[in-house]
Amino acid sequence: GDSVTQMEGPVTLSEEAFLTINCTYTATGYPSLFWYVQYPGEGLQLLLKATKADDKGSNKGFEATYRKETTSFHLEKGSVQVSDSAVYFCALSNTGNQFYFGTGTSLTVIP
Amino acid sequence: DAGVIQSPRHEVTEMGQEVTLRCKPISGHDYLFWYRQTMMRGLELLIYFNNNVPIDDSGMPEDRFSAKMPNASFSTLKIQPSEPRDSAVYFCASSPNFTGNYGYTFGSGTRLTVV
Image (cartoon, rainbow over all chains, first blue to last red):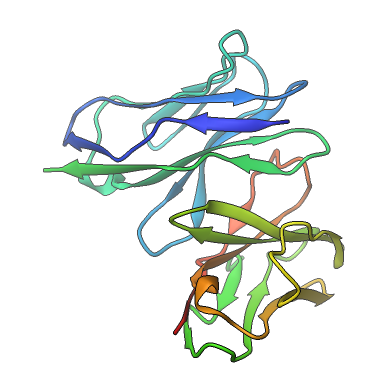
């Protein structure tokens, strides 16, 4: 069945460091891919999305490219800030199916 | 739009008591989802509705859990009787479609503690 696998956390980075959070997926057909962010005490917020192969989703300095050949959708940011500290979820949506969320990766950015 | 609104934000109750969680989805969103989040299990889909009709409740853990959506602007998740293992954050989310091309919009959640 469809599923999403994302890298284990927690991840701790210094401010201005480069961030990569890996996400790979298993799905039939052509799913849509998403990254959600959850700040402490809040619900999940959509960060970015890509609906077809080679699409790049971007928002708030974060980017992720839909790579069908490697079934990946890795999240990247060139220079993280303390305010980026949160839990990040990779997710997949396939036609006729529900969302499949990854287990979440906790990011802490230290000054 | 005010987004998805959940109440209460926090709930502390004693084991055996009935608990009711509430959700108001975004107007015009035809799909409503109830999720539970715990450290051990992550995010779990409990049930979802389409046009107020329950479509898939296979994620509801047991008969103690029930959910209703009497109209397009209101849904409840009830636990009766509650148990300590029900302690979790419960999220409601809504979406204009099922495939999720627009993504799901989540509420801020209800943190339930059963003592």
